[in-house]
Amino acid sequence: MSGPEWHLFSKLAAASDMAALWPLVEEAFAARSKRTGIADPEAALGAARDIVVYGAGDFARAVLESWRERGLPVRYLVDSNPAKQGGSWQGHPVAGPDRLAADPARPLVVVAAMDTSALGAMLDGLGLPYLFAERDGTVGFLPGHMLARRRAACDRLFGLLADDQSRHVFLSVVIARLFQDFQFPMKGNLFTDRCTSHPQYFPADLPPLRAGEAYVDCGAFDGDSLAGFAAEALRLGLTGWSALGVEADAGNADRARANLAALGLGHIPVREAVLGTGREGVGALHLHNCLGGVIEGGGDSTALDDLLGDFRPSFIKMDIEGAELPALAGARRAILAEKPRLAICTYHTTAELIDIPLFLADNFPFYDLYLRHHRGGSLWETVCYALPRPKGEGK
Figure (cartoon, rainbow, N blue to C red):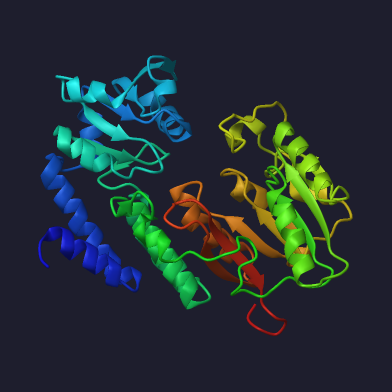
């Protein structure tokens, strides 16, 4: 077994800490630079006369918005979804991948999608120069290149995590985001497949729910996690538990109420609110409803602190499409007063994987932090669990 592919795969698979990863990332950057003829990704983007964005979804929307004032020459978008092809989106025509193959201009292709598996090989086959974008509009040689730019923060978080499994999950997810070519049709990404655990929000290797648990589900969607909480409480034979759902999308909230009622859980309230700090406008959060629709509305967001009333949470779960950080800031009073267990999704953006755990560490130092990943082969469903330390331990 030899060759550059084996070298990279074997070294990544054997890496056990961040120090072993970063030299491999630099090697990959150098190899991509040689292959594409691009020395500096940002300079290449600024100098490009002809740009094609590969992607026509929420990720691409964020990239295009971040480029708006730069006047970059985006000629058209490419998306593999036939329903999007032939129309216009965000002011640009949308074509299928076959247009790239026939394009004589050899444009610079900027991939603007969270899941980029197989796109690199396809673009290599076409002989086109390409880069990967982050949502903030920066570009690099690998998807998830923000992680390499912020390696000091990654190293800090790796050292803060409370157990070996969390460190294994973090390293595996970072590798999976940077190296998306290690992908198989059935198994998905090898590096997230190897670190997956279940059930989501109630993993078996963390402390179980307790009697009297008061669960707040931020991002109740169709009631699935509320029902999952009830099922886990019943499995454990717990009494005195309660729950509250919060959902931004009215249609989802209606579905949640109907689904809960069908299970005999109609006593669990589901409130409609867009969670945030309570100070930013709803539109600033760029929320989606998990079904492809945009959540729109006027006015400001709602702070969880202002919504809870007399409800004293012992467990707060958040999966709110990238608005977790402002929602955590809007729950500061409840977190400081009640020290609830937290289960916060960190997968919607590359930055969240780092920023959410570090926000918790910097603002609520009485927590131990754990990471678990709950969807094998996918970049979705990474969750940061914050468990309050027993009294007398630490801060």
